[in-house]
Length: 448
Ligand code: PEP
Ligand code: MN
Image (tube, rainbow, N blue to C red; front, side, top):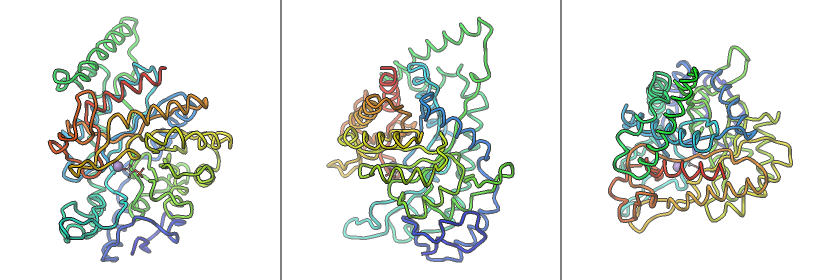
């Protein structure tokens, strides 16, 4: 294992600690060469933008805004196209319009996009027809094809991840500031969708109301800049420490380290060990940080994570993304929230209703029931309302395409339909209609 290349270091504390889920590169020299190049590449995001997102997340932690974080489970290099990126963005913008209008809450928009290429896996190998091979760990590590050759980790893929992220982010910035995200476009985002789906029609009715409100404001002489572009941030799981570390830079304004691969990064359920390299790495950077918390998380672990990652108790710095499962959220979440609140820490609480609700259908497809997803979000709202804390947002796996990966939803998808458009590189995603359904239902819960 050679994740600790001894090239110049920008972050250091993590290097001597055990790092879970790192690729076993066959050629340490090749990794060192790629890391050295990555260290010289320009930042993908700016430190000031990370600070701005931290300020937005502080509003979420204080109960004044709601986080919508979403995108693919795993982005793929062969899906870096204008159509795919636009479809994802459009879905997030529509969800955000629903939440902002129907729940009347400012929405902080963060994509699982422009860097979400690395996957932790529960098993190191995969067996098909009696053949055992290493698992696919995301396009940043190896290939998804079930061949021995494709599954060898290749450090050149880190370079491709950087370029794919840069190309994606460039288009996202173009769309969000160049007119496409103008609120006047609320109907245009829905154009290809409205006729063939109930959620599309429901959205259209809401978009008409938004239009009326905008016309009224314009008639009053108000046409603020906020209506013409949108703040949109990037995020991914900080899994591959060689990559993330190579993309850290010292900010000239503050002398602090930032991971400039994304505005926000999170540490996954499988790599959040308190004495592990990932938490040490996250503690060294100034970005807003997320940590996934699964059903086995103890209050003591949560408090130690706060101690390590947010010693100054700074709202916006730390987000706990809980992913308990619909059947456990009402049981596991209350104690965590109570103990964290009693400690005086002001974290943002966000619900990932996807990862605790995955199962394998008889057809062999990994899937999730829309009703379970919804029920976990409901449980999340119930717990927070019961404790007087703020249900700060949702973190979801979705795509703008009309895939058939999760079952249920308004335009019901059945287990027998899963094979029709099952395209995910890893976990099952909500399609556009299921995503919009979810946004409407979350808006109702938020208002209630
Ligand atoms: C993910 O977000 O795709 C993921 C692997 O989540 P978790 O770490 O919560 O299992
Ligand atoms: Mn996933």
